[in-house]
Length: 205
Length: 260
Ligand SMILES: [Zn+2]
Ligand SMILES: [Zn+2]
Image (cartoon, rainbow over all chains, first blue to last red; front, top):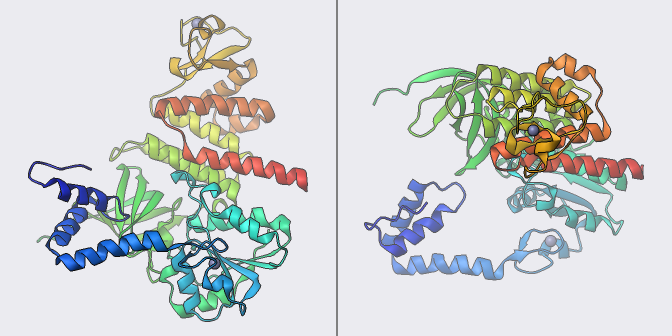
């Protein structure tokens, strides 16, 4: 945006520019946040800055399920009690939290880190699809639950994965209807999500 | 403060992006106001009763409240959801391609009745047609025409001489077909077969039914697609994103067919 007029000190202008890059932040919000940070006690500001640095330095992606983790493989992937024959495929790490909250799923996860959106130029090559295919090589997996969001991009992603995975002979299921179209999985209440998981159905061709 | 002015409009949702916690900005296409961005509050929450009506490629009746920057969706009702288009990836990818072209070509806040009608008809056709690619070619040619970028197909767009009934060339930079004399001096000119020229002319002059009556397949279909695409890319000065996904589905579909 770079609206830095002589009236704005250069470091402040730089902070506004950086904040503006964040999702959901417009120019006005970026300015408001920047002035808020400016007035914050120095200790709090330092804590925020170090949290940002730390998350970049210490948190990585699990080499198996692609979830965010401090240890690789992540705790869920290392958990011997979990059912390795089922993989639940979601768009974002937050969706795993939503599914874990239901306490009714004991299988494995896989995070795609997005959904197919052709108009935005986001295709399968931009998602963790080849990593998912890699996991199916072992022959251990017998079911894939497609738990992408019940919106256009999520459905497109589910249809694409169905096409790709069907020849491999695994059972492919989709969360049951009941999740309202257009809502995001991360906002679903536990009970609705639990029912959707339990009522999942095989995708017919 | 006075109550916001409310108005109603029919619209097709072209695309959406997240805004803040649970809102979305929708890019919509309307007959009377052309393309515009509107805000939909709370629609990412699963309790929203509006979100299902506001999915891309839905034709709906919107109630809008005038806002400071963007107008805000106050109510909506689905008029047409083009269901078969949502349930098949080949149809859906082409529907999204059409939506992307509308997004790129349509000016903001300018009425566009013929193009709106063309777009809605194209979505209906893509929900039923057997030859999806030919349906898209017809859409592309009409859209170019309506937006003032009609490719020249009768005379050479370089020297104006009549095109002879043999292989010529096609050069987006020059505005359409070019004779073999001019072709040598024009960057990006590619061979345009006589049949390719005939198909392009059919798409430009014929009705949809006329255009669909002729079965165009294989290399000829690819040739026509390449010429129209290069023309569009040259007008827009950028690629059409959704084309890459259609290409990928085609490639992978062919591979599956070979493996099966
Ligand atoms: Zn993991
Ligand atoms: Zn010429």
